[in-house]
Each structure stands twice: as structure tokens, then as C-alpha cells.
Image 1 (cartoon, one colour):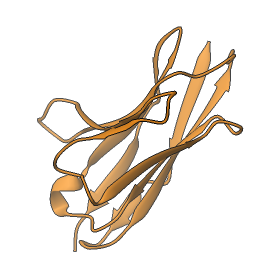
Image 2 (image 1 turned 90 degrees about the vertical axis):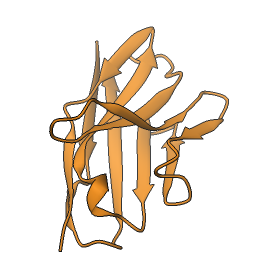
Image 3 (image 1 turned 90 degrees about the horizontal axis):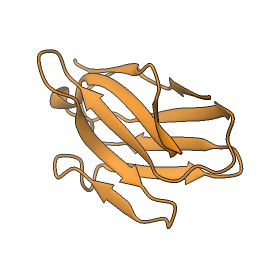
Image 4 (image 1 turned 30 degrees about the horizontal axis):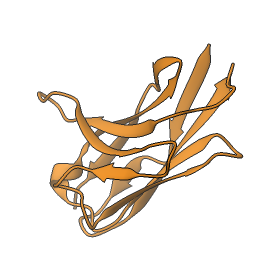
Length: 114
């Protein structure tokens, strides 16, 4: 089993920044792809950004140029640096990781409001 624990969410004003972390633990030999998703109230969960074992990254159009995904393989930790936050970025943010199969974290709330 693999456990994913997100942290770093909170309340921030528009234009502000947050850095999310996702720590993986458990039966990990190697983590392949990882990603961040988000789900706003009344909406479907959507991909925010992903990073592959090769280092290739992919972003949703709505966050390009504002968010940066990265990973520290030695620490089995995934990050999401979020800058220039907008109210429409408000959502629960989830990380996932491919370790034989996909695992998900419990999510962390991000609220962008003045």
C-alpha cells in the first residue's frame, strides 16, 4: 500500500501564492508518474499538472505560466508552486501517484478570496 498526504493548502488573497506538498510513504520501490488534480464545488475533478518519471511536465491551460509542478524523488515528495492565484483556483487539490496502480491522497483545501 502507498499513502499520499497533501499539505500546504489554506486561505490566500487573489494574486497570492501557495506551495502544496504531497508526501508518499509505504510500499514504494519507485514512483512513476505523479500529478495534481483539483475539484471545485459542483464541478468534476480536473487535471492541474502532471510530471512523468522522465521529467516531462504537463499543465492545464488555465494554470500555465502560474503553477509549477516538481518532485523530489529522494524524498518521494511532489510539489505544486502556485503563483498569481485567482478566485477560480479555489478547490480541493489532490495528488496522485502511479506505483503499480494509481493512488490518491485525501486532498487539501485551497481558497482564494479577499
